[in-house]
Length: 104
Image (cartoon, rainbow, N blue to C red; front, side, top):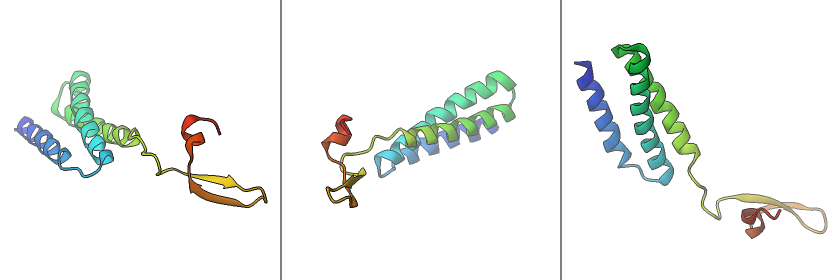
């Protein structure tokens, strides 16, 4: 009976991952799905029972979502940099090409 619940949860997660709006949300959903599957396999291999499988799936899904969200690339123009003018005043503005090329 628990196997049916796990399969239903995986299918619902996959369906919801397709409905995400932003790239970060999509990557987090995909990471949760992959991490949950991997965690379930590891939990089953280590513990050999349903409880270990569910704990592994939950931990893997959490870790996968965090990694997927954290590795989302930033689009140009979203980064803000601090600059100093010739009079010593510091201001914030969108980063220029020096930031993206590593010439800062």
